[in-house]
Image (cartoon, rainbow, N blue to C red; front, side, top):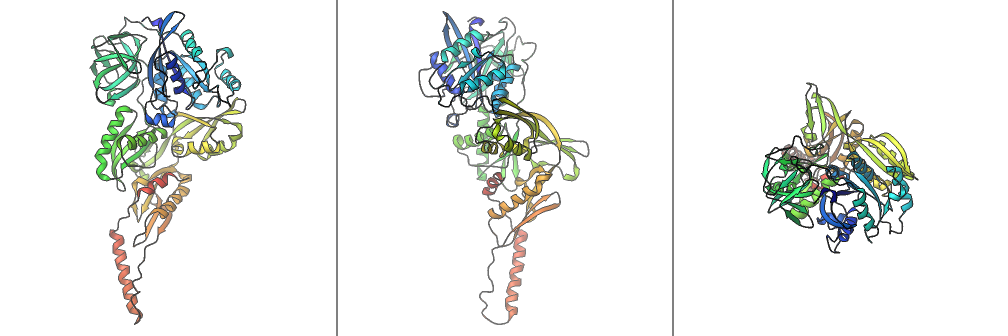
Length: 595
């Protein structure tokens, strides 16, 4: 088909603004699917239960307008901040975007973040107000916000409802009339951008691509620019509800390639596919290696499940290339894996999938981030785990990752939110009113401070009305110390944390008190200590279980009782020397809940 009859577009929005439901209505209207259950593009149970999109999905629709037959390629993108790189590659493979805003909630943080990304790629923006059928919808106020945000005319904003199908015809017409057709040269060397990949157990990894220049033929040899590997294009085709094979695809088209790849690491989102015989001069710009932001240890509850856990993580990685892991061992938890995640939601989803899809019972340690350590010898180390830090005497200074966060909230919650951010060592960068009584706060925050409970607290103090988005903003020198927990003088490496020196005393005391309530009593005292280097900053003691050995002495000289007590004292001393305190799994889960 000629390029002028092809339209490639995506839907961008904040999480839970109705992207997947509206996509269903577009598919029904173009008769790509018959009317059926909702969220056709969210094919994971987890996606449907939580109402979120975890992976990008692409689908081709056919639409007739004014007697012309058009092909519309829709790419449905995730809305959560953790998957923003996937969103950026999806945006790079389109010429236009539907900017979806919830009529009941208005413009939110992720809406703005994704909009800026789309504008950077010169996409044509079609603003759409969704959920206009709701009783509490405020389309006029939301229209004002959109006009302020992108400076468009009011008559350009479309009103729709994914639930009832209102406004879907207008959206399809706007896609055809406003979004430009793709540009490219079908005779040039092949240049195709990979924007997603999925794993099929029978066919290996299937890569989804958009052709920028050239033509790809079934059976030809292709090369992946980033990895430098060559493969046979066993099958190529377009993405309908099922894969639809074609003999060739030319520039402007969105399609898939099957080439028998079995390793997730060989297909990278953002990579360029070119012809092995006639390669393109350069790859498409914008490729990045996906960098994990949050790290945590995952250990099997039963030590003999270690190999099963490795196999489960390898299978998960085939469907989720952004998950990284490497083996590690802990004296408290045995053998496990140090895993890297894009964020806390990503970590939660991986845990949930391990449980559901592979029936793996695992324990996860306190999540932490990577720090850059500068030693006195001039070496620079990147540390993902506090237990891997060099001795404090060797460290010159530590740099921690900083994020630039974007919080949009109602003006009544400004005070508590600023207090929360300042308590997390945040620095206010900018504060401005978006529209009406909605305020945008931009804070620079240390990533390590927000990985555990920041998002939950933000939602609690704003009664669910604050929206949060962030992106990495470099590293900053900080006064951080490694806090160790000692049980009877032995360090428990899985409980070590890096924390700011001002918080160390409070955090150490909380951990010791929590452990005192959790650890089972032994026949000897257990000393629980929090230490920074060689300095003990706080201590608690789990008292021993004491047997009354003098109960059988009914009379006689006091020296008889003293003799028995001395014998007991020696036994307890010997027991303490060889005794080993086991930290129950419950302790690690409780530490996560510390305020």
